Amino acid sequence: MNTSEIEQLLGKYFEGETSLLEEKQLIEFFSGDDIPEDLRQYQPMFSFFKSEASLSLSDEQQEKVLERRLEQYREETSTVKSHPGKKRLYYFSGIAAGLLLLAALVFTLRNEIGRRHHNELSNPAAEVAYSQTKQALLLVSVGLNTGLDAVQRIGMLNNAMEQVQKINKFYNYQTQFINPEWMQSPSTNK
Amino acid sequence: MNLQDFNSKVYPLKDKIFRFAKRMLEQTEEAEDLVQEVFIRMWKHREKLDEYRSLEALAMITTKNLCLDRLKARKFPVESWNAQQSFIEMIAEETRPDHSDLILGVKEAMNSLAESPRMIVHLRDIEGYELGEIADVMGMQENTVRVALSRARKRIREILINNENYEYQ
Figure (spheres, rainbow over the protein chains, first blue to last red):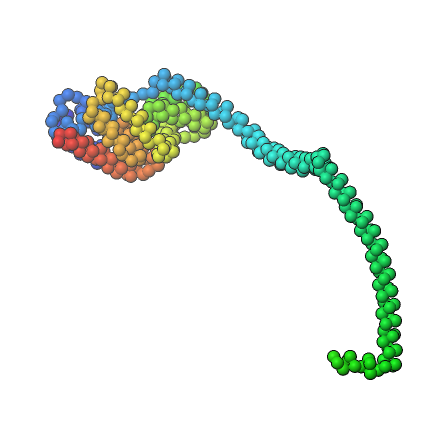
């Protein structure tokens, strides 16, 4: 195949109009040795296509992939299998933790209050103080009661005073009739 | 489809699937992995496989979709790791006797293409698919494939010429 034919084919090639057979001819031409200077720039392209087409996947490579995949699969299944159970476990452990916290809180609070009561009752100094206060209050109350008798007597005196005032009123009334001027003089003086 | 049919009809596609996946993912290990994934998908649908016109087209479509999924998932976070990985692979390829710098340049030029034109060039120039077959895999009209193929080939040429000029400067 001469140079001009190749040039023509190249023109068609770049327009996407060569047939597969023509492209094969091009590849063959460029894998030869006697390539004119001005066509040499196309050589790498066609020798690349030719060498790439021979690339293959060896059995060793395939086995390697299978091993990798098997390992990956094992890892995935070991993590995936426990997954739904794990999810439920998380759910319930959350609730359990919440309940535990609540129980702990209630327990400690109750303990705290209980201990406070217990401390007050069991403190001997406080007991002594309590009984002393009680006695003192009792004393005051007894004293108050005795005072009450006196107050009652004062009440009697009050009654007497009322009687006296009644008598006094009556006396004043009487004196108005007996000596009206004497009675009126202080009122005019007012 | 039984295991025997699967082994004789689907399994031999492994190299094509591998090459296609490697073109898209740019990583050998991930491409190897994807081949298995494609086979698993095909095996899961083994009851229906006989209904398909072309098992090869189905395999390639599956490969294309899985690759696009992975690329989408990868895009942002694995970028740096990706660059590192492809650098390691570059070194590995440079030691291949038939790969000169210029040929690696072609690979880079192809990788710089967007996903769809890259797939089209790969299927045509490396796998030697008819435009109609490519149209089936890509879910495009045959004419659209031709236009995209032409544009992608020209783009590769452009990148290579620019690189060459740059090297001589």
